[in-house]
Length: 285
Image 1 (cartoon, rainbow, N blue to C red):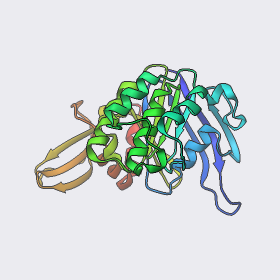
Image 2 (cartoon, one colour):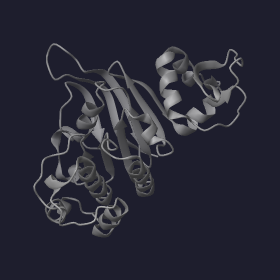
Image 3 (cartoon, rainbow, N blue to C red):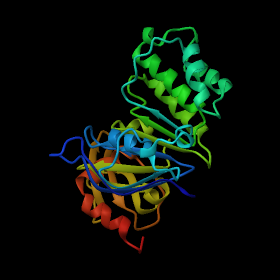
Image 4 (cartoon, rainbow, N blue to C red):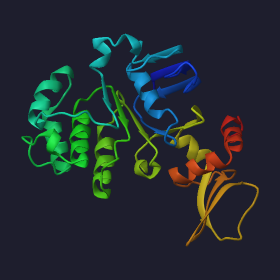
């Protein structure tokens, strides 16, 4: 796989006195759905804006689809769709929104757009966007973004405003939209919403990247399991009490297979970043 995004030693700040991102480096591959996770205020939205060229790095380099995003070249922009957390106020109907904006994306599919709208139970394309609820408007924009078939799809908190059934629909549609030539980056602090969807996990803390690994690598090096409350050993990194027993994240020293629990992983990293970093940097694992 090739890197769709290549960020090296980037600094960024909105004001001279406070840096939001310092010496940040990150590479993201094509053919994957990447989860960009972190608490509110860590700089996830800013990172997506840097990738798409909406804001500019103070230092360092960014390559998006082999372009410098700060130049906002048409050849790059037609292959990027960015869904922000705060949606723009538009008075257009869904149908007219498509007529105005779809021509910017050479691979846009009206057939796919209609199918996504139908799955989301958005009944009429004559509906005005400003008359829709926040959740319905979010569904329209997700459907449009997926239908652009751009090489790079950036989504900032896409599940905010969606009910539980709609979140499931979103996961199914996003999973079906990915192929080896496309890269999807989903930024969220609601880690459960990306369960069984993402191929790799990037976590921000302290305005920096503290973790960036594929699901395959995580499953190989960490073990997620439920055990009796009195069961513990030196492999345990993090434990969380529940009605079933202790949910644990352990160092996987036996090669046992388990399903990656994103929320447990998230909590384990914040509980013991140093040990997690050591496990993933070890050449023996």
